[in-house]
Image (cartoon, rainbow, N blue to C red):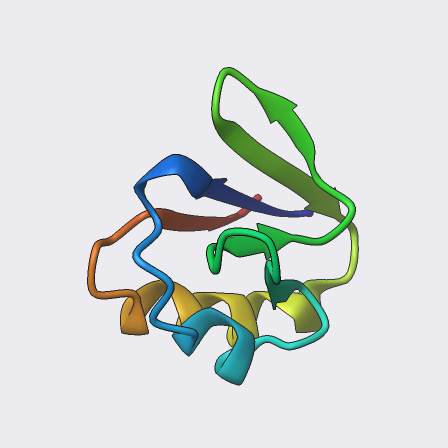
Length: 76
């Protein structure tokens, strides 16, 4: 199981997440911030859980590239 979390309100709109993991992230045309696709919002933390272990690598690269460190990725 791979768990990806995004703190969207702290996003600066650098677009790295979409470049590294376009199947999980998109940039909003409304405010220019990242959107974690198919996520559930809990108090500003947007989270998805997926059983696809191949999703870990692109999301982990996006997390490491994020200059404000607002993406976390765990594999359990």
